[in-house]
Amino acid sequence: MKELTTSIFNDYTIELIIAASIIFLILLFIASRLIKRLRLRRQIKKYRRNRKKKYSGERLLKKIEKKRKKNTNTYKHLKRKGKTLVDGYFHYKEKELIDTAKYVNSEGIKKIKADFDLVIREGQTVTEVIKHKHFIKKVKQLSNTYECLDQVIFFLDHLPKQMLEEKLFNVNLTESITITYDIK
Image (cartoon, rainbow, N blue to C red; front, side, top):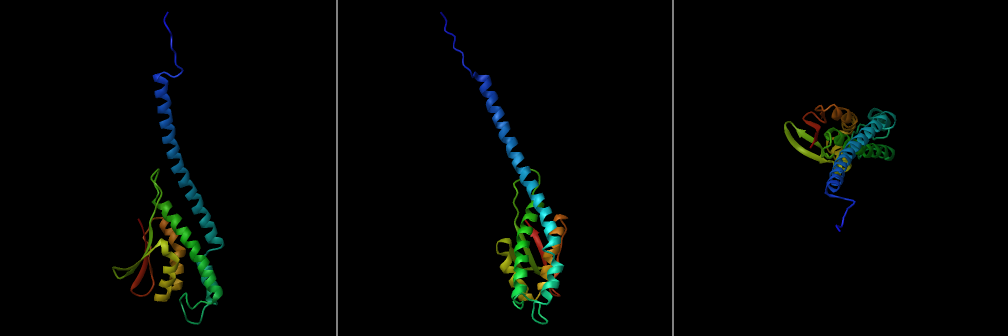
């Protein structure tokens, strides 16, 4: 008598299961990257709404106009309430600019990452580069050094829109010094 050995899984079904699981993992990977991009897009829309309601640069400039010492344009010469308002604005802008840089730099299923820098130039030479890791501290130092708090707030207010349109955007801090951005 011949013994019949039958297996639930023969070679053909095992190959099908392995192929299906590999295809499933690839589709899961692609879907997760696309979902991250959609989340970033939703976050950008949320930032845009908040910018109009709470974090408008023009409104901030009007508010801190009365909360600074006479004829000054630096962070260190702001009074207590003015410093609090500007600190909140800088914290918000740090988050917004990092997420905007990630959104602009992400394409398709490529890994979403971006290195965002502010570049200060004197003529054509780069004077200073502000990394996003030390953003708030360096921006405060920048406004104190060049006495340009109003110009920095104006620059930060208009920067996300220009980043989304992928346009070069720079603002004169003084007659010879400009500030611009760089996404790597």
